[in-house]
Image (cartoon, rainbow, N blue to C red; front, top):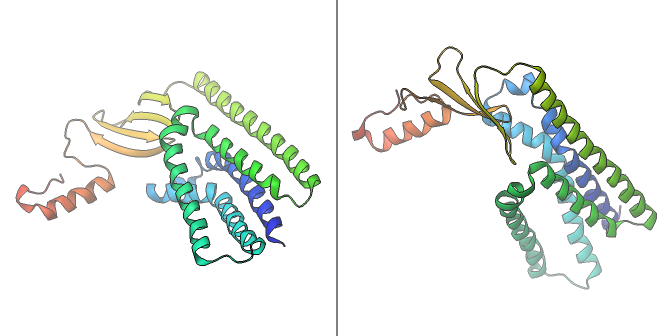
Length: 239
């Protein structure tokens, strides 16, 4: 394969993988094998299975772009190579902060993901070896994008219908959809003082309203143990 062909292939497969990532994430929500794991492991595994394929082919496209620059130029030195990869790093950091602080809050995570997939698909078209490939891939991506948008609408409609048909969980005290995730606050069915925070069905916190020192979440116990070790004079804060 020529570097140009690999750029097209990597960017095209990356855009398709990014487009499919929300549906991969949704399909993993109810998998008992994953739900039984430690919460940080759940997050890592879901993120890896959802975004690693697209990210891998994106890296392939970037590496092949550097190879094309080296092949087309008379001589590419260490300074030019460093400038290329520094630009990639700066772009990645800027994109991360812009997405986290601006894009997600404006259009939501799913629309942001589809926008990224569209940008990758557009970037792959100039690298197509033939105009026929570019036209075919453009048509295919538009069909995939239309199907993905329709799939999101159907899943949202089914979720809303399920909420109307099934009785509301009496232990759910708060339920809302944000641009980032589905937020739920639930009380323990055996102790109304115990409250748990869930984001997209993943528990993120657990507190005891009657005893703030009752640390019920694992990472809180780690921080409390570290604080007790650093300041033993203040006593052990773990109840």
